[in-house]
Length: 450
Image 1 (cartoon, rainbow, N blue to C red):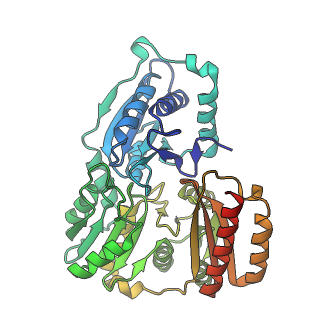
Image 2 (tube, one colour; image 1 turned 90 degrees about the vertical axis):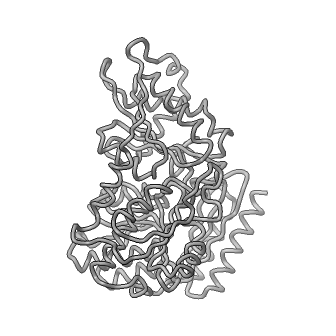
Image 3 (cartoon, rainbow, N blue to C red; image 1 turned 45 degrees about the vertical axis):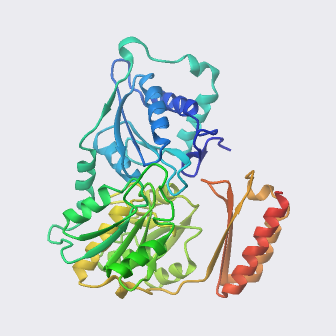
């Protein structure tokens, strides 16, 4: 098992292991070692971050580590995770690094890494980074004299990304006449989000666009969709957009106050792309958490749903393997492989708004495309995470409950890849049964790990 990397990079409370500046410095050195070119040929690595106060610590530490290995570092400041993925490829950099803990509280932080193609590093490269950090001989490898790298600040990064975002909106479409509320979670999208919507002609109502370093994700953003729902109803907006702290996931609200998660958005996009003849092959990639109701709906349209482990990186890997256009997670990571290499909340919003404009419809007209199976999700906070099969008797309990559900439900139990928690999801036609089974498993895990 990897010690540092979870499902989405390295993550933890800032200034507590593993999110220490000295660890970040060594991670920077390891990245520099893996991606540096021949001597005398300096490679580029881009570093971006969200709005957390601890971002300064890790930005400096990573920069020092990279420069010490002969890498030139390009700093872009606060920008969404998908912006760094795009800029890494657009600027021909060898790698891109995002300093962010996504939807976590401000006191956490993390490190995500993209390769030169804009895709997240595969497990094998993350394992190589960890191996280098434990290798005593690696400590002696370093650049000197004129081989040392430099650091630069890029001033046009926001403009580059804005042009990329607007490329998903057809030239004959603008957002004139639309009143849109956007909640940027006081995070990385606080500036670029409203900017792009206004440039496309929308009237914008801002929420969560005043970051102060410690208010990121605080009772706002995609994790608190009721906030944007309230604003939409108060301001009589056509659409509400809620993003998380690093801008890679989204929740949507229509003009009537209906909320849409990632599964709902996949249904809308799959239906549209199929009608336009763009869904080739007829496959959508989801995860083990994707609602079974969506699977049934897609099947009726002749579309296959393929499930992966939780994490947009695993969704992307399967999409690449199958040559798919569309994939995503219930949590709101939506990926369009014709335009993105990772979840992109803003790009997803622009593509959705373009469909509404093109078809002359309100978002509520897409509400209820399919019937959801009731899902109960319980998070259990623990001091130590262990693989599910190592918790005595848990597999037997899961098997027993799955047998009771038969074809009318599912059981998913997994340790979180980003937090010290286990996540239990029960899906059943009867919501009371789902709740009962979820509580039974949660109680069992707590008892076993006390």
